[in-house]
Length: 319
Image (cartoon, rainbow, N blue to C red):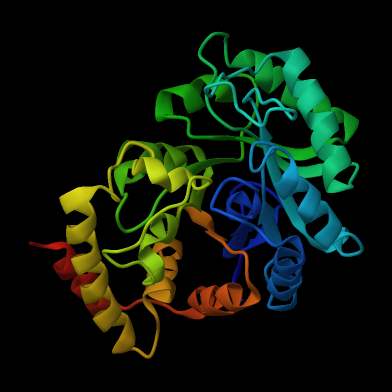
């Protein structure tokens, strides 16, 4: 396993991290908690040290499962969680993605996360989405207070653009920005990653396997259940699962499979290796629910893609 430091910090991470979104009930279909816990233990045994979650991943369920799994090894792990989205633990809704980065809501959120994760500090705490109803200095001031109190080691953001990050930096030295980034979604590469490089900020990549598309398991007959967010066919503004777009993307995946197979690898390993080959990326998150999935994904940590392979990947996307 390769390890990296978040830029300008002492925070160390495995280049492949475990994303907790799929383990939240009602996110990617049904979940077997015992199977998920076994997968988390397998991830740790294979060298993965960063575990990412959020209260909204299954309305607290992802954090609770992670807390159970990491009990006893917590001091050896980097735990990342988030806040800033209102959610109702009773009716299990996020209230239409209502954002709230107020001091009061963040304090309440942190205490809930600490309890569910069975820890007294968070290694890296993120604002999940930018709340534009208030100045970004407000949540950043909360981060400063928490850090002094030892409740968090570092603070960062998720889904922020470059200008919003710039505003945050006026109040608090954010460590990273967690954004969607994969072979099908390269939108962060220009403005966002350029800003990160210039300001010594790392990026965390979620959706590294394009929300399952780059696992190579999907077919034209794949259907998403009622309890699967992908049923809406919209992946953060990209209609990658919709109609002709989806069929075209499946053709690209088949091309990528052949490239991976020529190297004795899977398309998922190719996709994850491509993400971590970007030097601005500190960690690529891969969501898993079974031990076999994480066993496959960790191989990407030590696979250095050559220029020739990268050129073949680009050719696969050319019509």
